[in-house]
Length: 148
Image (cartoon, rainbow, N blue to C red; front, side, top):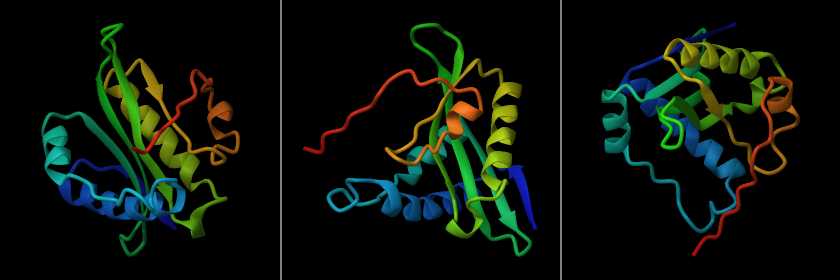
């Protein structure tokens, strides 16, 4: 069994960033050219301003099984509060269960309670598997990257 909850403490954020190392290695196409190297001072600053929303799933032993993380802020074009996904990841052994869906729905509810009016999520090419559409998200743009 597992527990899903919003966590707003730096230790939980640090754990998510470490689990993010697995995420980066698994799906990031530039992982062989640009190493994973998060800036914890930036995370601390964003957390202190209340701009991060993180929902985690923890096992019975309190181990981190997955997370969904968002940055919230005012949209420059519309002046409404929006949330932009920073990362979402579930350990392989919990994929194909309802864990990710349940974490994601809790994150959406937390964001709505914080006044968020639009939520943006991203999937690496080939990783969506229709999840976004099933939850009512619409495709609005395509993102390209060039490592220089």
